[in-house]
Length: 502
Image (cartoon, helix red, strand yellow):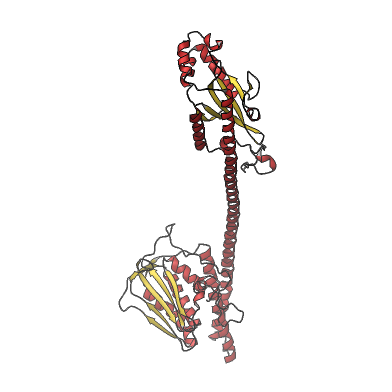
């Protein structure tokens, strides 16, 4: 038994931590498998036909097997004087010191003295043997053997016979049922039981300590995990706040840049049209370059502003009945000048018959198609072809609902399969080098994915490197409502490496 009994909180460990099993005093019940132990006690009692009780230091009975003496003791207990004397005797046996005081004497028998066994007489002439249970210097309880009839008892002592009303013949009849045994034999039985008990306590202590230490290790691990989770939650909250501040900053800066840039583009267009006077060919080329680059920068700023609003959760979709074919034609018209300048053929294939309108945000759908078309034109060489195909309204297996498929296919450079997932992350670029051929900030496809999923749709890519790509958007006729009952674009996944194809 571990003798340490100090308070676990005094060693500097926080009060919330549980006291270690190594720091507290174990009880006898802690170190025994009580159901199995009770069976061991029962086997001993039945074998030697004598009662055995095992009690801990608190006076709680861990095992109590009565053999033979019940009727006799009940008879004596039925008399008032017998009741008081029985109560005093039982109190001495159960709660008195296991020492040579208060009528106790050393038990006779081999090994009795080493085991600390004492003999306690009962006023009826019966006898108890009491043995302390000690482990590693600590007293854990006591074992009580009896009462039994000593072999030398010939007649009842005066302490029983002077009780008024006791029928001695009846008492002799009942006491004959109590095991008569020499004290030396009873002491040897108790010594043997003590050896069995010591073995059980030793193995039980090891098992108990192993179990409790495992539990303590698991609790410590759980506390560490909880502390780590709390730190991660705080870090996550901080990162979300930083991300929100970043989005707000980008939105503010983008908004402030658009106003002067729009003026630059406007005045440059007026110069190109000759409103401030005629320009020579070289000057006209310079002004048109300013307009072209200004529009590219304006589109970039608009994309950053859209992304910041999406990430901040402020980009709401304004739903209404939309003719998807008209949206596609408008988007093609917007991209046509870019395709014409590059020498890329634009092809549009729409269903021949009118199709049902879908519930969507027309402006945001146009932005989706424009982004996909502009992306395809940018990565298609002169003489290539970009086609956009719209299906009829049919059941879409990806959505398990009716809807449309819109495919944008090009004959451009294609995309490697290991980059399919990355291209939809914000700021991802297939070619992230400073000398890359194609410009862009890596926002177009991220915005496409966010807007499409905000409509309850899906976007996917198929490509063969060096032979072209096909982007497919699947849209439901009626998008599902979000948890808050409205519609909003979903924030894109940030790129871990800060690159994007578009």
